[in-house]
Amino acid sequence: MKVLFLTSRHCFTYPVEPLGQMYLSAVLKKAGHEVVNLELEAIEDLETTIKKEAPGLIAYSATTGLHRVYLDATQAIKRFAPDIPTILGGPHPSFLPEVLETSELDIICKGEGEMAMLELADALQAGKDYSKILNLHVKKRNGEIVKNESRPYLTKEEMDALPFPDRDMMRSHPQIWRNGLNAVMTGRGCPYKCSYCFNETAQSAQSGRFVRKHGVERAIAEIKDFVAYCGTKSIIFEDDILVMNKRWFREFAPAYKKEVGLPYICHSIVDIIDEEVAELLAESGCSAVAFGLENGNEKFRAAMLHKFTTNEQIIRASRALKANGIEVISQNILGFPEETPDITLETAALNVAAGVDTANFYFFTPYPGTWAGDYAKQKGYLNLSYESFPVNFHEQPPVESPHKEDFQELVHLVYLGMDYPALLPFMNFVYTRMRRENPLRRIAVKGLFFLSGNIRKWPYFRNRPTILPQGLQNIG
Image 1 (tube, rainbow, N blue to C red):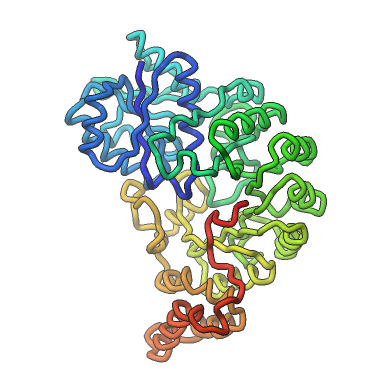
Image 2 (image 1 turned 30 degrees about the vertical axis):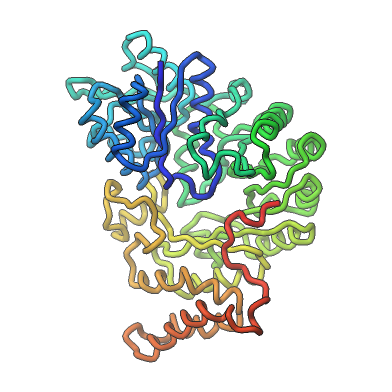
């Protein structure tokens, strides 16, 4: 049977492959099913592709916000191909399964989807009933919704037995196909319970072990396979935390250096980074480590974000990485409920103290299924319904607060303060001591934006180091 996967350009936050869909495609192909992939740009393209390919199932995966792109696509599909079943997987239906009741979708998949998708494709091909497949909620023709239980998470052994992700799936994505950068996951799950992340809820969403790691031999075999096939020049490990287990990494790092030897970037947490880990990362070819600094105020970080690292741990981890020649990338969030501008500027100051090379700032997004999302909704900080979420909140923060306009300005100005820390006390004075309606404040903010946009044009400042966000351009 033929399965059509739809992807949107919005799902590529940077140019690497969507590994979840690629695992699904590999499992389906191994079982003899055919897979077609379409990057969704226009409904006309969708109609043409569906008429040409005649798929037996149309599938998509989405976070909250991105789901609206696919609900619109589903609505269009039902106009010209009403009998083709549609299925939505990913975080959004996993935490808001009621989307099946309020949309024209036929099926949703909660949690890990490899086995559920395979059983669904097999059932559709055989013309059998698929309404009792675990992990699936199914809408029958009479409108009744069958809500099945979730199966256990794949075991480590079952995960090792999965086929390698289907790299051919990205041939229709020229910005990704053989661009020199490839993604890989050596494990699944995260043991931490950050308030803004779905992992806390996901840990108990299915039975079985949530945090799992491929065996070193299996992980290296997959990497060598796609390096040879794709002409890879650098690698990004998409594990939530690559060095989850020091014993595993002590075995993996030298094997990677010997068998692969390409530069790579990975994600980590500061708790695990010490001199030994930093040295192993550097010796194995790690060029950059990204970690969640998130917020510079220890008390606020613990109370609102449920992150209990200290500023000293953050500074020490960053210095250990930099001492070993590894670029440090920090991820930061502003605009939490009850956050104030002085807390945001503390975050900028901590980035400076830690000596990070690249800092990325994002608005807090109150996703469903998270403690912080529920808190924002219960306390009246969130006026949007989840069904009206935009694809992203790059332009303005979703949380209603007296400081919303401040955050809209500071998400840009923090970079000026980090590059020129002498400005941070002045910025703090402007945002904490001057009322917004004060004409002098407006002049000060305009001046800061002028500096932000023009200071690099002046000869004295042109070649000074910067920690402006640079994405992945420094890999390798």
